[in-house]
Image: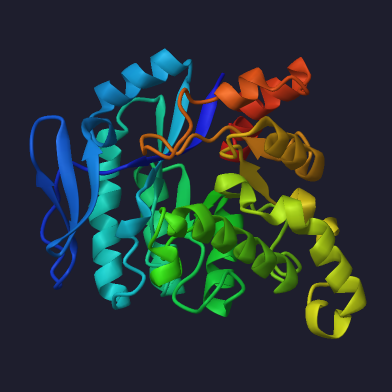
Length: 323
């Protein structure tokens, strides 16, 4: 069973969300549309975002049996009042169930993460309706994953057995980051590993039960490469860094990462650091910076044993999903 844990959807239109600048879709043909933020063009997409037949056809071509299908982060609406974000979440979550009617497409919901009570309520509603887990952004404004309200939500996810997929979003902006897609090439990895640190150094893993299943997108950012630096800092500047009960390396079995790193040397480092039980196939389908064909890096990695390859291609994801 080949399972891709990192894919996204965009519905083919949705009701007016009710605030200026809200996301909307300009459908330009049967196979192409443009995501708009108010009147600003954000991203051109194709029908594999909303058409399950197109998605399943590509999965067959790539040899993928199951996709976890998560929201596109631009729709999170964490910057809006919580009631508005909750309304947007209901809209996109219900439409996701229509897209994911096939048992091969496993929907993850979104929640109004800025309000833990509303977030828990929407997660419960979605689990009852057929969602299998939740995708969250890696921060809410200046609040990272060690924020008290977000910790409350993660504790709830652990209590109800909902797997959590963390995706970077709302990257830093500025003239130096507006060239070469630098927000995606630099900002996304940095945002991701900052939030891994927030769970560790913020003491979240000391407060959340180890039943929490949580995975970080994009290989966990640059966390694996810099683990030694974090470890050194925890020991040498414990007065500033040592908020967690144990050093960073003690928490590697508390979270997973996907495989979207595009280079065998990077994948080797990821597996060496995290262990072969903590890396799962992810493609970032259907977006152009994703891996295509999905799973090609893992399938072609010469350093993996057959057993490790099977874990990365699907076994670890099945455990993550509770299958």
